[in-house]
Amino acid sequence: MSKKILILSGSPRKGGNSDLLCDEFMRGAKESGNKVDKVFVRDKKIAPCIACYYCRNNDGKCAIKDDMAEVLQKMIDADVLVLSSPVYFYSIDAQLKAVIDRTVARWLEVKNKEFYYIVTMADEEISSADTTLACFRGYADCVEGAVEKGVIIGNGVYAPGEIKSTQVMKDAYNMGKNV
Image 1 (cartoon, rainbow, N blue to C red):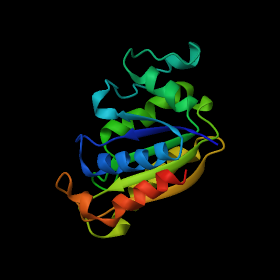
Image 2 (cartoon, rainbow, N blue to C red):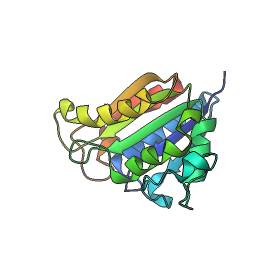
Image 3 (cartoon, helix red, strand yellow):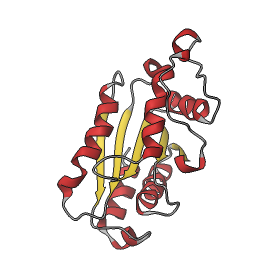
Image 4 (tube, rainbow, N blue to C red):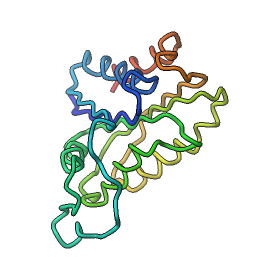
């Protein structure tokens, strides 16, 4: 059965290592007949949440008028969410964190999702991705009916494109193919 997949590429570098893994995941998922939408978060104007709770009294509408309403609707409509970020000081980058925090406006509507996580980092030690994955999982813990389906970690890569010569590219493609 075809699924609606939303990939949130938090990479600040178009064509960066985590973004390339998103593309491979997407290629595999599309080849399997799924409908895939990739949002390159850096290209969107998304301000951080200011905790004004305007949304609470205005049917989930946010006081900040930017691209988040469009992204949030895509998150609500998707069957599958792919969260991707490079490791920044053992956590996700600011671009993707802003998206996650801004889901507060309609967070109860983001439910029954399959989650996949894509992480890249210069560090060779796989455990250096633990806190980043904990951040993704912390968000998923707040999503009713969330199910973690897969994790890709590209370690030991820093320069854009360095990931291309690794097994992880094939892993991302195969994970997408098997959604």
